[in-house]
Amino acid sequence: MPAIKLPPAITSGLKALGVDPTELLRRADLPLTLFSTGQILVSTEQLFALWQGIGELSGDPAIGLKLADQVPVAQHHPASIAAHHARNFRDGLQRMARYKLLCCSEEMRMTEKGNECVLEFNWLLSREKVPSFLLDAAFASMLHLGGRGTGVRIRPLRIELRQPAEHREIRERYFGCPIKFTAARNAIVFRRSDLDLPFITYNADLVAMLSPQIDRELARKKSELTIAGRVKWVLMRLLGGRSPEIHDVAKELGMSCRTLQRRITAEQTTFRRLISDARRELARYYLLQPALELAEVACLLGYEDSNSFFRAFREWEGTTPSEWRRGRFANSQ
Image (cartoon, rainbow, N blue to C red):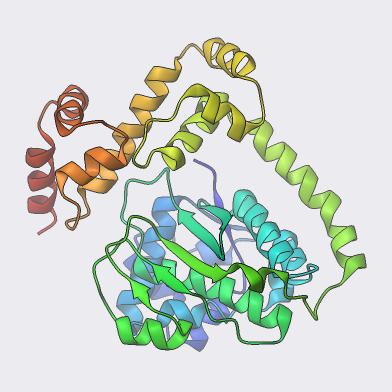
C-alpha cells in the first residue's frame, strides 16, 4: 500500500487546536520522531490511528472540521496548490482528485448526473473503519476549496455517511445542508451548476508551471502499480449492487479487454480471482458496519442472492458471515 504524505505544517495546526503532537503519536502507537522527519509518510492504518487519536485527545466532535482549515494552502502539495488556483470549481475538484491519487490513500470519485455532482471518498485498501473526524476533514476541505476559490459560500445539497447518526447538528450547521447517515457511501453532493463558478484565485501561469511536475509524478505512480492492484482498486469501486465485467474495468483503465486480459495473465492471476479478492476485502469492511444487514452486504458485493455470498464467505474465512461478525464485535469489547 502506498505511503501517504502529510503536510509538515500539520503539527502547528494540531497545537493551535490544543492537541499535543507527541501525545498524539504515543496514543496512536507511532514513532515519536515521525513529525520531526523531513517527509511525514504514513500508511492508511497509521493515518486512521492518527485521526482516531486526534478525536480522542481533543474531545471536540468538530475537530476534523476545524483542522481542515489549519494548514495554509502555500504549504500544500503542488497538486493541491494547483487545485486552489484552477479556472473554476469543476477544474479545482478534478485537480484535487489527482492530488488524492498522488499523496493520499483514498480515491475521490467525481460523478456529474442531472443537477448533482457527487464526490465519493473511498479508502478501499483498508479493512479498518474510516474515522469520522477524517471524513469531516475530507469534506470540509472540498467546501474550503470552493469557498476560497469562488469567494462565495457554497452550500452542498447533502452529505452522505456510512456511519450511524452522530453529531448531526454540528455537521449540518457547518456544511449548511442535510446529513444522511447509514448511507451506502461516503459522499458530499454539490449542485452541478456550482461547478461552473469561476475561481477569483485563478492563476494560469502557476497552474501551467505546476502541471508538468504533477503529470510526471502521476505517470511514475501509475507505473509502480501492478495491473492486478489497479484492477482490484477499480473492482472495489464498481462493486455495488452489480457484478462488473472485464469490459467495465478495461474501460475504467483506458485499455481494450484483450490488452487487460493479457496483462492480467502475465501477472499469473485471473479476472475471476481478482473479483473474489476484491469482494473478500469489501466483505470484511461491510460486516464491521452494524447497520448493514447480511442481505445488504451480499447486494453491495454484487451477488444475486445471499446464499451465493454465504458460500463464498465460508470458502474465504472458514466460517459464516454471522459468526465472523459476532467474533469481531466480541473481540472489540
